[in-house]
Image 1 (cartoon, helix red, strand yellow):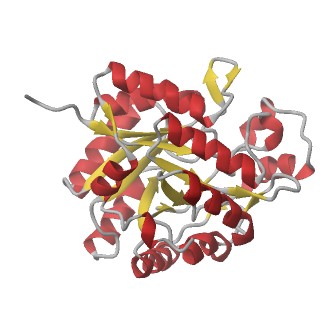
Image 2: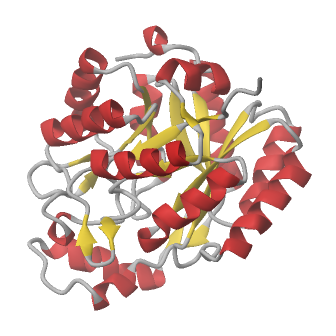
Length: 310
């Protein structure tokens, strides 16, 4: 008798795209971020993808001091895989962005696979009131912003990860990023099984039409063969529809307040756990099983929670 396919749910807890003024439910303080991740894990997320914020004003931060209390609380309260960002914010230098993953040596870290325009400024049409001026300035500056991820940057981050036993969630915002990943895979610097996170719907990257998703899948199959695990990230309103289509095509899924503030049209999600619960309900209705953290570790060949640096 055939067994149901197991799907890894990643919850991206908080990030650099949305600001605290956009939703009262966006976690900001270390305790809020840790509690949001724990709630997502309890709802079924095998992986929690972590950014940190400066608790004084909610500004995205890659200061290890802002990560330390979050990671400590997570290590004590969940066995979920902790995935630390090396993306940080497009406004940061690559050196800033690498600091937490290099210091804390997580099982998994994100890695953006190419430089790109990163246009967040259309959100100024929806959100007009901000509690901190940095929020408005950050969105406005994205009109003239290149998110820098050169071949040298990627190679440097891969080297740190390979030395520390950290594997990567390869964030691919466009077809060219898959070609870049195939390049590093062929050189032996990106080691399989690759965890490919296809990102849809951010201005500057690939669109969010189902045809875009299918194009990503065909290209990944052609370039990477069978040496990868595929996951879907749809930004904003695209989160649940694209995750559902992707899962039906064989993907894992990523949801969370980093990628979308919404649970329905015009309805803010009250937590990361709410989004995890929604996609879990969809997946189980399609007769998929939800992977546990240890099953995700096995699928992605991670080093184990006892071998991290926090």
